[in-house]
Image 1 (cartoon, rainbow, N blue to C red):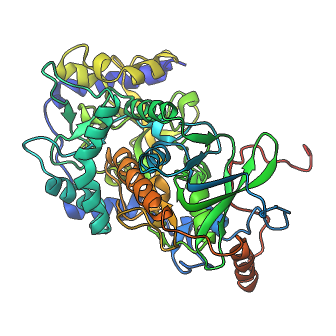
Image 2: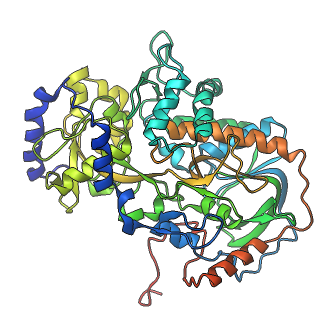
Image 3: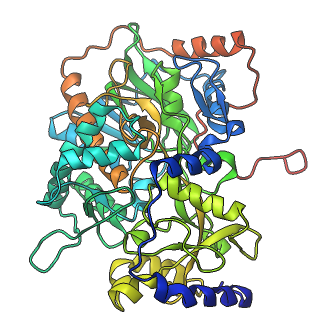
Length: 537
């Protein structure tokens, strides 16, 4: 769906201001201005979007309304007859989730000699990982250091991050890049083999490593190939529904559900790693999302039922540049690499209103503010949005730069008659990342014995805002660490007595005592886009 004549008229204003904007950086906001725009315009500051959790180990913490609805719901297994006396699998390490975190965890656990089973609700590699585009951060250039990376991460998170997790993240970063290279990941390089690196929002050095604009897909291809080559056992279309605990309260397995046969079955495992990803498909505050179909917060719910503590659940990342037009691409990630290469956000008059590489929370809030001031553009479907001047990249850096650096972006919009080499993109913030999750330590351990967490369903390292390129890094750093540590612990772990679901009964009692009544059950497993009604059922 190409641009309408009315939109074409507005694009003329963008083209008219381009010469004056080229190579003329817009000033960054001061710290006071950043706080002001966040407080007044970022969705995290809309009180009606959140409420306190009434039950569980993190009772009193705030969470988005949609997340709290699931946290305060009884288990899907309540009232269901599940045989947990027989085990379909008996392993050392059960990995739940097959994105970058889960697959890297499985590879490292296998490397340690553990018997590993990976279970996933969809297919191997169906995850947000494969949809990540812009890059992965690592301080491996002479003008950079993990210490500088550390300061950027802490600053980006509002200095609320867990320092030990940030230290681990940045120190392991160069090791992760080397590991991926060894496995065959094809990063962008100069002719002499030097890694190409660029800026991201909130970075003080160019440390973003990329594979064009399909970095996550390239990383996931590399991990998936290695996983398959090692012949590690995996079961697809089998989401984990609840964890099993032994008589001492340690995790000792899980109950899974086969989506094809619609049958439950049990797995015994000495350690379990939750790597189920984020929660974008809950559509907090009605926002569209960049997330894959399975991102329904399952790991957070299962871990919380078992007693794992939460961290930073009251902060969600909205990516500033989600596609707002054409409607077929609503919410699609327009990678931050587009801005990293120089594209600027513009209002209806073709004027830049914010620095193009503010941190994501500030950039998103500034875009929302501009639209609320009436300076945005209206799409034909009535959505408020602003321009992202992608053609400025070729204008400043020479024709062909977009083709070389953003081939996936070019193709995605060409399908609908839009050429981003010549025309600006219509964008608005989109629900992108769950900053919080289950609290972990440096090796991915939760407070529940033998339960590990890695990837987007964990929390602490990003504080209240994540910088671009630190999610692909996060899932690999803590995925690998959780895999190694879980495998080592499994060698010394003994499951005590019979496995049980008593914690589910206890949780149900807490809901009853709190007077909570709901028709919801959790985890959600798959998003609800077509609820049955009395007329259709």
